[in-house]
Length: 427
Image (cartoon, rainbow, N blue to C red):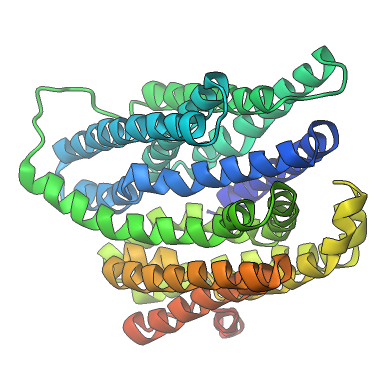
């Protein structure tokens, strides 16, 4: 697990760095309006992806270790096939709806609409494919399509368009480049799945209604949690684009993208520990669960603290790279950095709750929290502009992980917060 954590950390760092450079290129050579629109579109795709997966990617990670431990090998192939086709079908409909929305209601041409619509099913299939690979405890390979292939191909395509159009990029070229990057990412993921034979394609093995109902029951709870998290992360950009302006959306998008770098280590360990947590919970080893969570917290904070300090000190330099107009957002970035430090300090609470069977409790809390955040963002941005939106975004980012950490301790007796580091000293 240590090697996987280090590899995933560097992969996520590579992804974050490449996406940051791409954002700079788009902002510099595409202009404020195009960068703002791309931030909104990217936010919509990220927020819509967990809806289309219906939480099935998390259901795979949860049930596969159970089926293997119980010797029910036939169900392993069934759940993987079902999730791929179920999520793929929903995402195709969602992508078509997104394309129609952009063309008929926002006035964009069909090239932009289709390119954007295609990104949704590609993103959904990629997430599910990663879930299948991760469920087989191959977390190092699972992160490569999204964290390495996607940003690398995206940056190459943007660079080609910049060279071909003499240092300018259009909105169509940006969205098209992102779609191409997702195609290559999915191609890589499917090569791994086929080569390793992770999916049993024997269609003679029928899927029972009872099994589907069980998977959907878990998926329904997880999807609401995932939707809530996506909305909490992306809604400041989306609402800024609706209530304020494209430039404001781009500004808060730049702030969010930089601040999220603090939590990329926590994101990495969340993707790693779920199969190990599932196995420990199956055998009822509470000490092992606490050990996994504590080590995940130590690793996350070890990375997050210095990253936050560097970003805090060099905020003016980093934001000025987007353009001189972004310098006024320095206080906003520093507020969000503090919020993400608290976010990381709360630990991997949501992963633990979903894996341990408390997914329904998690989804209810997250849905209520998201409703409050959306209302708060709408009101604050309408009355106070971008400054009010950033304040609400910071409170929401720091607040819900702390709440879930308290529930973990009360319901499971597991401390996911930074205070769990005391267990390392007891060894």
